[in-house]
Image 1 (tube, rainbow, N blue to C red):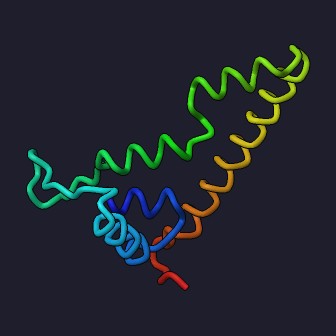
Image 2 (image 1 turned 30 degrees about the vertical axis):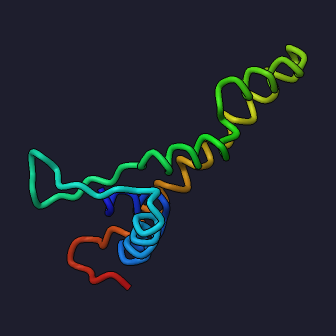
Image 3 (image 1 turned 135 degrees about the vertical axis):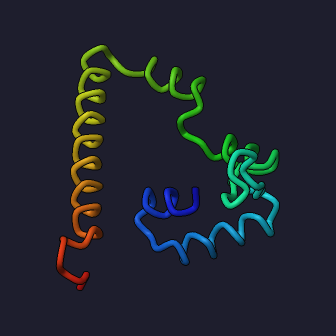
Length: 110
C-alpha cells in the first residue's frame, strides 16, 4: 500500500513513509496489519482524517452541484472538455514517469 501510494504521488517510498508517519502521529491515519497477509500494512484515514478531508475538499458533491448550477450549458461543456484534457495529460505523464523508473533489461538504472 505504501509503495502504491508513493508511486501514485511520484515520490520515493522513504519520503512517503516519513509523510505517513507524521499523519499517524497527528491522528489522521491509522496503520493496521492486513488480515489476509500479515506482512502488509493497511493505511486508513481515521475519523479525524476524514473530517479534515471533508472540510478541505472542493469535490464535495453538494459544493460541486452548486458550482455547476452557476454555469451555462456551454460553460459546463467547456469545463468537461477541459477536465478530459487534464486527465489525458495526467495519464500520459504518469506513463512517462513509470517508463523512466523501470530499468530496461540488462541495463542498470542511471
